[in-house]
Length: 117
Image (cartoon, rainbow, N blue to C red; front, side, top):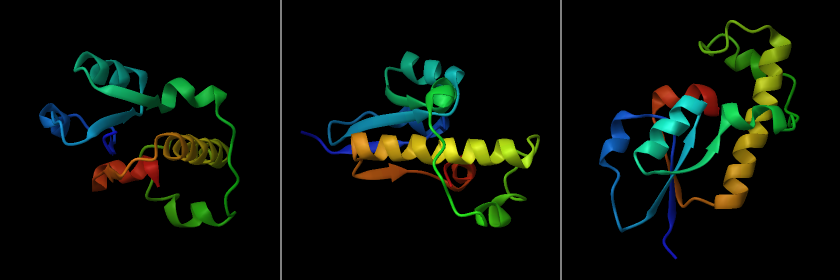
């Protein structure tokens, strides 16, 4: 069985991911991005927006958002309670992905870090 390499939700690099060396798997942030990747023929193993309502909220240290609250430019329209909900569900989402698929590595970049922290 080929090793799995997990790619996060960025479009421009994925035009070039065609290989027999490993199994590329993808995670999408939105339903729209999931459709985009699927139309390109990629194996989308998770979609945060699609799964959001079904995810349980993981617990995390109370001081976590002290360090990331201001830097999170994508969630600044939500109050602190909703940010905590999104963070808890994000933790569960990523734990599920990593536990089930056990990727050998994750291809990431600085601009994707905001939602996967």
